[in-house]
Image 1 (cartoon, rainbow, N blue to C red):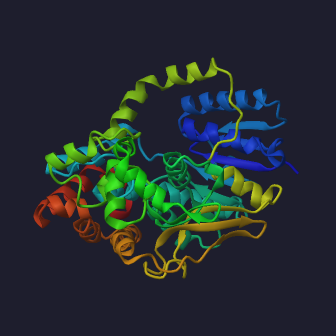
Image 2: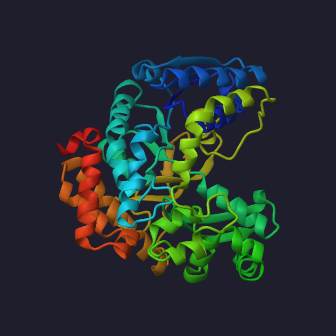
Length: 439
């Protein structure tokens, strides 16, 4: 029977194209019905054209449906992917601009800190509406979320809709593993690891080549190879201090701790000279979005004029769907799930990122045990803040939002309590129409 996969927020071109390409590469989904849903008609028609190009290039018997009706998209779906963005760049730019007024220098701002918390508070309402519709129209579907802030969104959905088979996915785990393998000159497909923590602050607890520990090779490369050190300065400094390697980019991780962005000289030293894709410049993603707002049509037209690459990529989603309701080949990935006896020294019930096994039985998270204490302390700080923000979103408690931001490491390193209160109040005022739960 043909499987039906719904993409909610399909106008996210990069994700949708790569995920559809991967999906159709599995024989079980060659004849799938791909349903693309987005509220932006222009982007929807463009991505539908792009997906049809992929179908035609692979000579797949798949069907493509484009709709602005979420109910139509979800009815009968076997799998659902969300890649939504709540508000255009003109809205969420203030996540970055307002903290900067007060001295909090943000690189991306989509995961934690004042920027990530307010992004969550705006995004949680549409995500919850989507989860409600999945529960109503396709309750047996596997629901995979790519929307940030990952941990908080997954945490609230999995609490409110515990019967849904769901997880949050991020490409930082497999992406960083590939980078580390490249640094030490080993084939990526010969590497195995145990990675655990929270989204963007997960750590490789072991890193093995054919069962042998190769952390000593990573350590040697970081300490002795200038090119390796300069590629990810912040992350390499975190490794040298903590003894384990973190998954997400230097730019992101510079926001989550107090050590790199609290003074201009530290930003200059650690955050602006790395050679990786995102070393940590101020407002990096905001500037990228502002540029692409006016160039995306030209870029997609250039894509249409190139041969379609059908080679399967490294994203998890298609392989998860294949394991659960495709050819049912077992597949292990790192997913975002609630901490029910998975990491012993992180808060019970918070959202953690741990190994998960996908099979015909669904998604089964794997117990990891205790994180090393230095990692547990770092992750606990972020996880407890996220718990406060989730509770605030469910109760409409503005004071709890302020208190959560008070404990954000970067914010606390830069601002006084009164300054944090003023910043939080300004952000509430700026986003008032997007935050009905606080009215």
